[in-house]
Amino acid sequence: MRNRIGVAVLLFGAVCVISFSAAGAPQAKRPRDPQVIDAQGYEKLVQQHHGKPLLVTLWATWCEPCRDEYPMLNELAKEYGPKGLRVVGVNYDDEGDLILMRRFIARYKPVFPNYRKQHGSEAEFTQAISAGWNGALPASFFYDKDGKQVGHVLGAGTRETYEAAIRQLLSGSGHSTFSLTTASGQVALIDPWVMTNPMCPDKLKNVPKLDVIFLSHAHADHLGDLLALAKQHKPQIVAIFETSLWIESKGFEEETKPMGKGGTQRVGEFEVTMTHAFHSNSIDDDGQRIYGGEPAGLVIRMPGGFTVYHAGDTALFSDMKLIGELYKPDVALLPIGDHFTMGPREAAHAIRFLSVKHVVPMHYATFPVLMGRPEHLRQEAKDIAGLEIHALRPGQSAQRVHAGGCG
Ligand SMILES: [Zn+2]
Ligand SMILES: [Zn+2]
Image 1 (cartoon, rainbow, N blue to C red):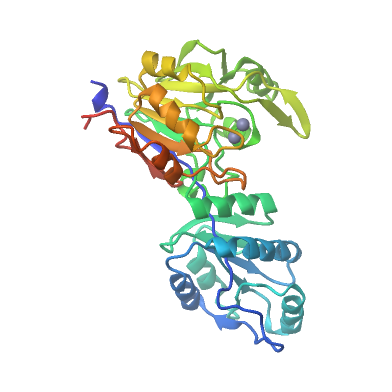
Image 2: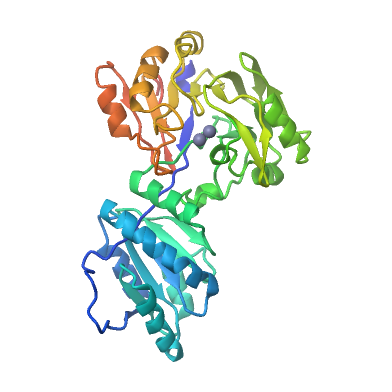
């Protein structure tokens, strides 16, 4: 019976790109002005980078946040160019400001190529880049190696924001955010880093419906946009007791569904059991560090029995064997990034403990220290018969991640 349940497990991923002017070798003494491009030229530009992740940044010398951002983007281009990222700049200065533009380029010596938007035809050019963008600078757009736009940073972005996006673009990681949809249409988000994740696809950033949030712990990369989403949708919010108290203190007394480890409760159409996770937990409340209770894992049963185990951030622990025996997850979402959580070697052993056949790796690549990758997990787990590892890209769905034989 469980096999008929329609389940969508979505990974909100990020994608990033870094660019580097491959051809760009050190420029000669008299650099030529950037080539002028129109809307078609822009599209050609993106096509030319097919096969490589691409970051396009749109800038002008009259735009102060652009001037602030540009040197940082140049640093990122230097760092991530050798790792496959391509970066391209498109300048929006008018003819009258060409001297300023030349000076700016001479001063910051970008390692990536720059182009200049043709004067006029604003609407057409803006449309060619993104229908959902109002044309305001600064703005940067990310394209995957197939030339598909997969993310953006609108307005000034911090280095952290760009770097997380780039690392997600290069690796295809979506960190730890997942969406579950029941057959009747109830929607849950686990660890909801959505709107402020530059690599989360727009169609998923616009969360039209949200019934439940499940939170493994309150570190910023998991708490994510919980408060904003709570305000928007008033979903029920499942978190450990102390973190729930903090969420309540932000005005969501009605929404919280606090719980403790070992317990099970029904929330909407979902049934959730909170499990161990060996990690830490605290809340950054506007610069103040607050105790958040213990970190947790979550076993979530969908109507009909399809069972998802989200391990949260955790070390390997042998009680995962009990989780496997008791709850028999159909799919396990396991951190593999290493450093702050288990890495691929430990995750492979977790799979043995859980006896699970479908695994979605998570929590890797987003930050430089998260070195574990799905291919490492595949290598470590290659002796496990019948195992399928689904490395989902942001926005990808593992809709057919069902236990054997479901249709
Ligand atoms: Zn954490
Ligand atoms: Zn984390």
